[in-house]
Image (cartoon, rainbow, N blue to C red):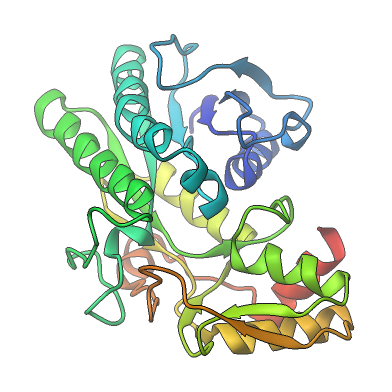
Length: 301
């Protein structure tokens, strides 16, 4: 097992939970972050901090494992910095892969279910190439991740780099910013203020929500393996956005009502991972049901 690890984007929501898990393993961990969207307070005290913008060349400390999570992930962040998001997915991933190659580390690249776009295949398997609008407002995130995957596999083919790619579906839990534009932190923030929960469109669009602890187990399983992927990580239990809103109201005891607003541009109608590969390769599947996860988030957020 690796003794030293780097987490890029380690001050963000997912990255900070990865830092926690690696520290719990007794590893020496370095967090690489420019803190543009992440918070230093999210990072465990035992973790070394490097204030770095991955879009610029940098040097990593000796490590056996690199987890590449650096990228604006919330709609409010990537829509506010569309060029920067593409640069992070391109230049940033290039710099991380080049450094992993230099220090001889295995690198796990965090991709996303957004590579499938508004899918015409359901559920989504890793063999599906996706249905993405390459010039829509969401494309800056979608295409940044698609390019990152292509670059990772190019490094594997050309340089023999030990690369693994995980496609992460909707994940939730503590440390999500209430202002980041994603569904659950928005719902929780509105519910706590007894404000209407804003559901885009008719609310029949679906999501598959995975609690962060389950997601972390999946990423670590990929890190420990020699697999290249891509491998879907997410909860195959599909639920409508409207049902999620109702459950948030219930677990918070809020007096909020539901307000339907206009549909979002290029918002996927259905989203559900096929996790057959993760089950077969790692014996991994989510264990925390949605209601329990929402109550944990309500308690800890």
